[in-house]
Image: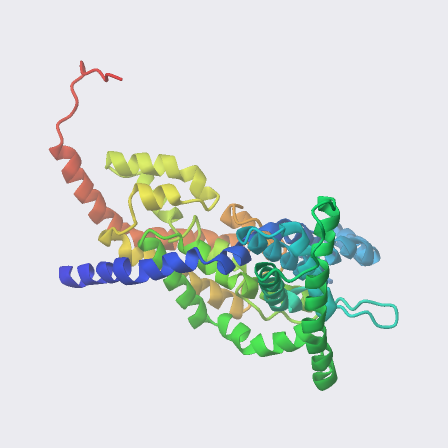
Length: 439
């Protein structure tokens, strides 16, 4: 058994860690991750406002407060939805500009001008004006994959033109701001010449905007990513990376963010249309129902630490309790430590996977509603889960049960590790009272 463990840890350290390290530092993945993070405040506020339009009450409710809220939201639906439509409803616009900005910064291009160029390219293929109107159907969740592709393409095209000195050359006497404007003329033309014909061709052949066609191509992948096996695979990869000492959440979330936001946008669209919601895997589902307290679902373990006989574990429990309430558990992962600690390998992987199975089953069997809001990941799990589900507080019961289940899974391994530490602590000589610390 010891040889198997050593072989496994050696494989993680020597094979998985180097690959994961290269992926985590890859400029495009970092730009996508940072772009989504930069656009997140707009989407969080927009999602929050959606709950005011569709309160968590039945239309047949006889409760006076519920009846008043439903009547008010019905009367002013369009007014309340306007901020939502200008934030979450056009989130692909913010994502395009943010990704291009971050990638341009890494290439030492002008980030603002590159972001504006990418935004123009995205609008060119996603919202072509017709009869004096701009369609917005592709500016929300439908356009996320197009936003990522266009942002990267435009930035790479700008970099290529600059690297090969393709542009309008002006004498050095020309002011810098004017020269900067002229530098963008050729990239603008290049974007239009390359992207617009593709967009027009897709419209002519398929009677769809380019983002809708790209979404159709990604649809099988989106459906697969929303399945339980795909969720469990993502959880496994994330926690194997964490166990190797690499920030698995940053890598996995960077790759899955587009799928999470697409699913959330589709749920919101179906909610507004009065259709049943079908998509499960969103960022809130991951943060508040799978990794409760942080990666490894370690909140239950922190509670066990608080009652530990080991001085070290009891101190770690006190130190980690408050951060874990807000899903920050680096103190637990590196202070215990859990990283490369064979005692905690099984529960660290198993606990979030069991949470995923239980939560997925609860939603698919309609015991709980689907997620409709984007919530800050630092929200305490019971509050964050209820917020994401339109303030349906039934989910808090599930969150508490999952916390207890995680503690139960960790318990036997916690006792083994506690016994090891107690033996070490008892073997160490206690410091004498008159010992002084010299600084």
